[in-house]
Image (cartoon, rainbow, N blue to C red; front, side, top):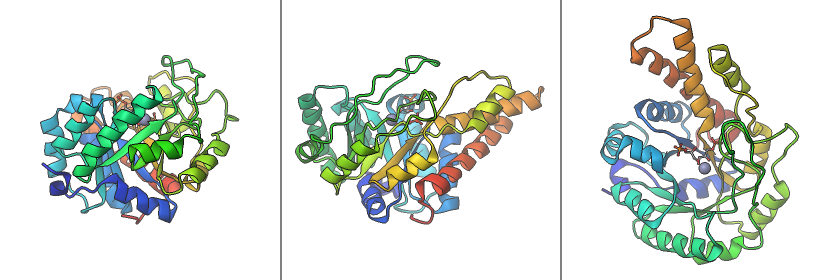
Length: 313
Ligand code: G3H
Ligand code: 13P
Ligand code: ZN
């Protein structure tokens, strides 16, 4: 089925509007009914455009039929929502997502040699554009974490000198860049670590009409770390990207901000709180409902206080 049959829109339309309007569209990851409902409730309550992000592993976890069944049954305003494959790693993976009804795919060729990244990105864009599906590609490598507790220092920032050529040769609809963010809970060694706005400025100058994407952009609210630890968990040294840095990035052509970790934290904190306070709890709906409520609140908070996308649907 084609995504328009589900009332979805593509990310090109959402992001070009955001680029002109100087706000960001949140890409929130989900992986089950509760996390999908949390995001859609936040979208409804704020009237914000939303990108529903599904990683390859989340797609495998849900299965094609259950995922698309939920999308078909979900309620949202027409053209408010895009369904996006997050970090697709091959042509086949992106093609598969398009064929089952996704409106947007990311090809993450950032770890490949440049020529290979261009070749596969272009092949995917050619296929996707036949169906009016949008394509996000990536240049530069985000620093990662080696395990739950150590921070790897291996940023490979996006080279502003090659972005124009890359965008032209791939015909990409948006570009994910590396300017100092990283995935997961351990993004920065200290609060003084800042994003590389000098690089971002050059990239925005060189491709002014291409929406830019920030991965690994969770702010890691300390209240969840505290709650998780208070209610029996153990998380140390987690540190995200400050809201002020994210807002500055939005003023410099970042139009899509990817958030997964913050929502995992909110959801987990909710479940831990329920388990801790109700020792005899056995009804999963009771703790999942509370976790869903906590995640909805976090989505709304980010829409209002970081993305500035309220009422832009
Ligand atoms: O950027 C990656 C997302 O956080 C998805 O992670 O593959 O564990 O679903 P996942
Ligand atoms: P976080 O780990 O910062 O939430 O990043 C998520 C992401 O980039 C998904 O693609
Ligand atoms: Zn990512």
